[in-house]
Length: 405
Ligand code: ADP
Ligand code: MG
Image (tube, rainbow, N blue to C red; front, side, top):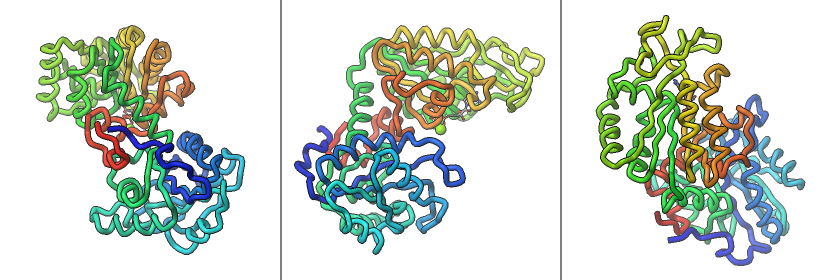
C-alpha cells in the first residue's frame, strides 16, 4: 500500500499544520556545524507556506533526558531555518505549554513557528503506549493536520512519529516520500547489475542487512572494519584489527550462501596496516593473506582497504547500474586512512544508474572528502532508518502513513 502524500490532505490554506521534521543537527557550542537536515525540510515547508498553511514545526535534538536542557534547545535551529526560508520563524520556549499555544495561536496564513525540543518531554520516547498517547494528544491540540517528514526517526515508535499520526489527519512530506521512493527502488526490481558496498565498524550492526540483501544483489563488496571478520573467516590472521570472533560462524554461513546463490562476494585483497590507531602512525600496505607479515607483526592494525582493493571495488561499482553503499572503507576521519573511502565514493559518482549513500558516518565522509550531494543519486538522511528499510523491517513511522512494504 502506498504512502499518503501531502496532496491527500487537500487544501491546507488557513489550517494549522504540524510538521514533524528531523532537525537533529550536529551542534558545537550552540553553532550548527552541518545544516543539511534543515535544508532537507525546505521543500515541504515552502509548499505548505505557499499554500497559506499556518505551520508548527516540531523535532527532537540530541538526547535530553525527558526534561528541558538548554544545550539541546532548538532555538539556534529555528534561527537557521529563518535564514534559509528568508522569513521570520517564531520560537516557542516549550513544546506543548503556554508558549507553544501562544505561538500557534499567533500564526497567520503563511506563518511559521518552531516549538521546543520534543524530547524535553518524557512522553515522546516513553516505552509505555499510554504515556506516548497522552503526549501525542497534547501535541495534537496545536494543529489540524500532521505532515510527517522526519525520515531519520521513522523506525522509532515515538509519540510525534506514530501516535500523533493516528490522532490527526496525516500524510508524508516530500522528504519521506523521496527517501521511500529511492529505497523502494533498491528493494523492488533494482536495475542490474546491483552492487552493495558495506563497511563501517561493526559486523553485528549490519548482519540483518547482509542477510536480507544477499539473495537480492549481484555483488557484495565488504570493506571497513567488518572486512577483518570476513578475512579471519577465510582463515587469514588479522593482527589487532577489528574482529568479532562471535560472528565468525555467521560470516562463514554468509560466504557459503553467497557461493550457493552465485552472488559475487568480493573481499579485500590488501589493506593498509598501521602500527597504532593514530593519524601519524607508521603504516604499510599488506596483502590480505599476509596482514601479520609486516614489521608490526601480530600488533598491526588494519585501518583502510589497500589500493588494489580500492581499484577492484571502484571497477565493480562503476560497472553496476544500481549501487547502495553503507559504511566507510576505512578510518576516514584520519586523512591517511581515507583513500579507500575516497576511491569508492568517486566511483559512486560515476555510476550510470542509481547510486545511494546511506548511514550517518558515510554521508559525513563523502561531504568531508569534498564531494557534493548532487554527485550521488541520493544521500539518505536516515542511517538506522534506511538500513532497517533495506532489511525489510516494518517501520512504524511509515506504516502509520499508509505504507506497507
Ligand atoms: P555509518 O554511520 O555510515 O553506518 P558506521 O557507523 O558503521 O557507518 O561506521 C563508521 C566508522 O567505522 C567510522 O568512524 C570509521 O572510522 C570506522 N571504521 C571504518 N573502517 C575501520 C577499520 N578498519 N577499523 C576501525 N574502524 C573503522
Ligand atoms: Mg555510524
